[in-house]
Length: 497
Image (cartoon, rainbow, N blue to C red; front, side, top):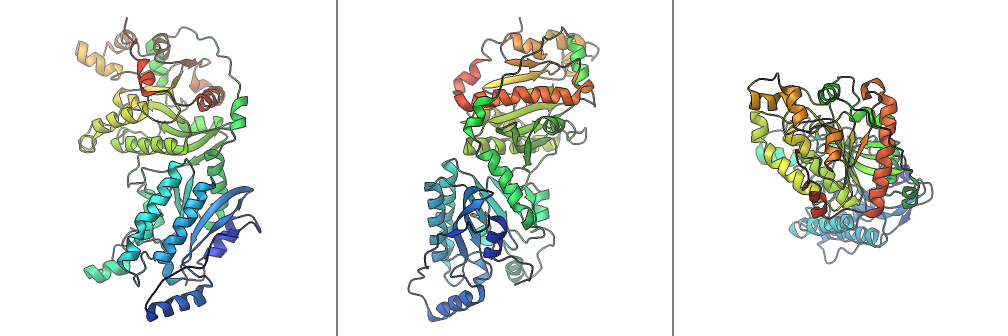
């Protein structure tokens, strides 16, 4: 065992508050086993100081009770046998029954070969227990250690609400030694690494062991908010909105200096825990996904990042699949979802078509309008086409004064109707794209003033907008989600008259 590899007990001592650990483990029952296997187990106990390949129990993380399941590589390479699975499943069920968030730190070569298929099928029991825990609305946070492979990676290692990994860890499904034995060649380097999984949008971060307590504490503070704090959020007074020409607003929304989602979070959020990708091998720089608090009010945040979208990399179907991960996360954690719309338009390309862009827009609309979580949508800037509409359906919709929503950019509408782009200002006015117009038609519930323009007052504007978001999120948290039919009904009366 490498000298820098933390044992299970080392990690417990590092992460949990001093003297707070209480083991849940009973002596394992390995049943009637062969003598050779019994000797393997005896040597593993002597080598590791543990009686099985996982330790389970509970403790305090900065004063908060948590349940913990930790792998021990020193015991038969952290492999999972029937007794190991019994211990894991029992601990996960106990965490669920006691309403505790569950922290998992797997490290394993996979299924215990001495037991074969009866051990292999335990993945089903472990996965079911984790899913029951998540269905109960309880957080499940995973720290992948070096190495995590095989059936462990393919069950409790890959089901986290948030998943981070140790720097330089070997993380993957088929171990490189097995690959070489089966195929007669070495597995390519730098594929089954924490850093590659992060780059591919499979895990959320690469985190050193010493930083784990902080990220866990921040994530759990957002995931398990104080309900009492939500009742004291004041309703900001809305400023009077001056009459602004539609085309002037469209032009202002395109100002490169206009604050986007990153500055909104920098100036208005009290805490941000960034997430990464779909968890399934895709990510898009045009979408920011995070756990966020505005004041004491938590949410899952999905924001179209104006600086992440470029002419060479516009918003693609990967961004919408990433958004759908955020929607599922909000429903599982029973947190409100906040979507922020600010896009020059979704990709028009062969790759986007091959990636199923239209289908992803449809699935986002379907998921959002039926989501079992309170939802708030923010029109922050440009709102071009289906890529913008995909994040619109919500219980409440807030808009910045110069934000707008249109089926096409006004220049595109002009090209269709007038066969030129010169009539873009006229088309924008005629199509009622502006936030104030949408408010008059019942599509937008609230418009936040820009004084006179967000680009001229980025910090003040973002803080003013953040106060509105905090109030709206708190109110939605108190009343709960609307029915899908109610969410859709707001658009029934929207007309162009």
